[in-house]
Length: 188
Image (tube, rainbow, N blue to C red; front, top):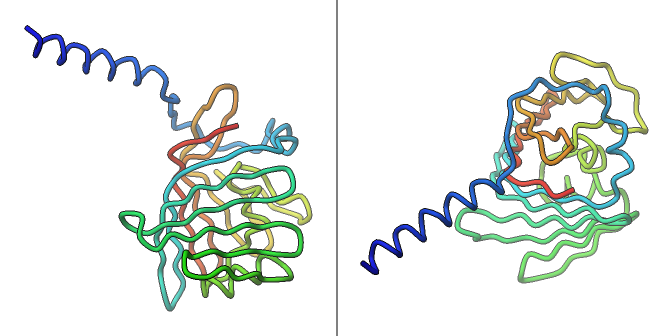
């Protein structure tokens, strides 16, 4: 009798938790009507990241928290090994890999390239992950994305989180680097 009660309780808990999950839809990406997202000063997401170039490839889980003046990015490898914390703010980046804390001064994109060994446009990526173009550069719209600053940004899957239409699967690439991001959870 107690066993049945526990099983029913577990099943009910699973059903209740399923109702609180975001409904994921496979709508095509559209830049129209997204301008309000530029005003969002606080957001975060968690997901999986893969970056590759001709020499190496990196995979990690990612948790990115954007605050008004800075970004906190946590990267970790399989089973949480190789955890790295990155703090980005104007003019500096601090990287803490658990053994040492290194402060990089200068443009964040250059610092990330030095850290990862792969050129990643981190300042533009802040916008691209939300399905926005980088406001400081011109862009050309293409099917399910856009071209900007020699990068092709494509959104193969979008998801509805509350009233927001946000990316779930993103592919960013240029002639040398490919970046894939799958967002499992958004907070806006």
